[in-house]
Image 1 (tube, rainbow, N blue to C red):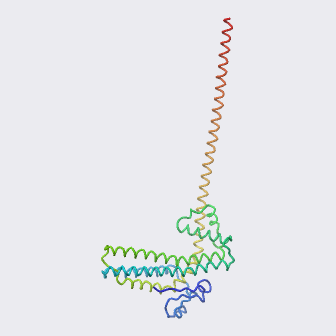
Image 2 (cartoon, rainbow, N blue to C red; image 1 turned 135 degrees about the horizontal axis):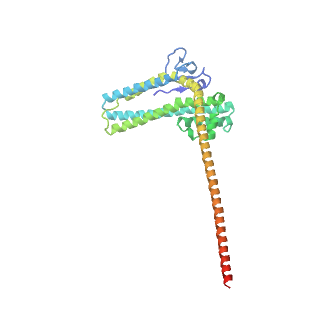
Image 3 (cartoon, one colour; image 1 turned 45 degrees about the horizontal axis):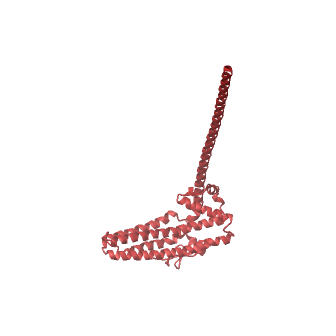
Length: 317
């Protein structure tokens, strides 16, 4: 499968010198020259088209695979091809991870460029935003503390620093350009392993002869679209950082309000318990006073009885 090489100088700011090697020598609209695509010339392409290109590649690859299912009965050949494909996937994942490291290093270099330290308030706020974004994406925003939610809810996306915006754009690019493709490749590898296992057990009667060609077709389509996809990723990151931040802020506000309501309810319950305890104490004190009066009456009654006995004895004498 072809390899896409990225020159970060162009993709991170100096777009005039950035390029993506796509393996072609054609020139169109000043964008392609000697097999290079200048990222600075790629504009106005919607994120929907990215997914359309990917989906088209998936469908064509799937069709090629299904056609092969019905035309080739050499199961053992297919198993070998699937295993070979998984080796290719392992190599592609390794290459993507290596390329991602370059982005990570450039992102880390932003700290020096903007004079940011790991314990600075600007970095701490960025770390909290990342934590909240990750929790929000996974549906775990409620795991944040009330203080964290209130802090996120109080963030004005328009007031993010240039360093924070740039770093969040890197996060978005690395997610779309590397993390998502790696996850897709890992899913493909898992499916390949499952199919190969089924074939080996005789659960399927057909093979995948020619599947390598189907993968090459899909790879060709994706490679041809890569010159546009790189630019799309950057534009999409710039457009959606503010939208995602606003959505995160609103969600944090709602969750903070929910926790505030819970605290108010808890305080009300505590107040009721306090009043009940006071009532019990008052009732106990009343009972003790009543018992004291009863004891006094009984004691007085005993004294009276003794006096009466004394009178009777005196009269007899």
